[in-house]
Image (tube, rainbow, N blue to C red; front, side, top):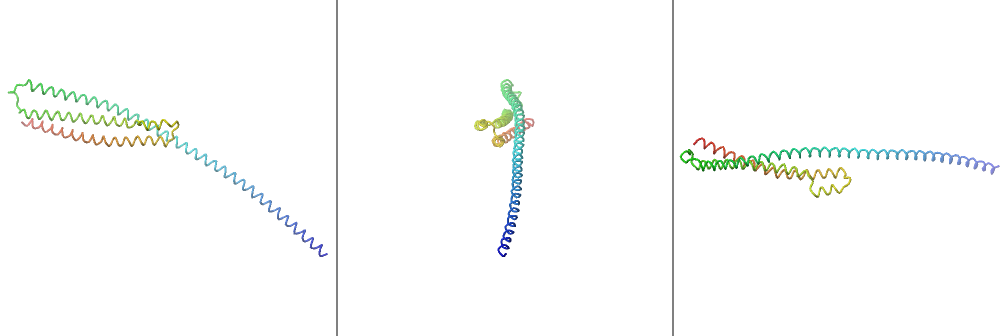
Length: 225
């Protein structure tokens, strides 16, 4: 009887152990299913994140392309204006040079043909006035020539140099960053050229102002005498 009772106890314990094992295995399968579902969700989220990143990059690229197109249009417009201004300044320079030459010719003719007894001013005074008028016109011509050089340099600075053109041409599909780099290099070069030309314009304007003041003083002295 004791052995039969012990055997029954062992059978009951074995059955309870089997039930426990079945429950644990069932819970394990549930956890594995949940884990697989979570992994699928994570994979979908990662795919969505990548798609968003690609879309954002494409939007940025489109914005850069649009910005570059606007910059190119603006540069073309400024270049056209600069050419028109340069043409106008060239005409002004030519006109001033003609006036200067005519002035010299007229003065030479007056000196050669005018009777000495009609002269009311000393020769030194006349010479002074002519010299200052010549200096005034020459200084104005120089200032206009500096402006032409300034506009020409602006046009040239917007045209990429040989190295930059080669670097940009070698890229079949250049990225937006590389395009912006080319533009920044051109703008930096333009800024340096403008600084140099600005100094030249300042000096030319100073000479023009000085010559103009001398011309005014000479004319005033001539009128007073």
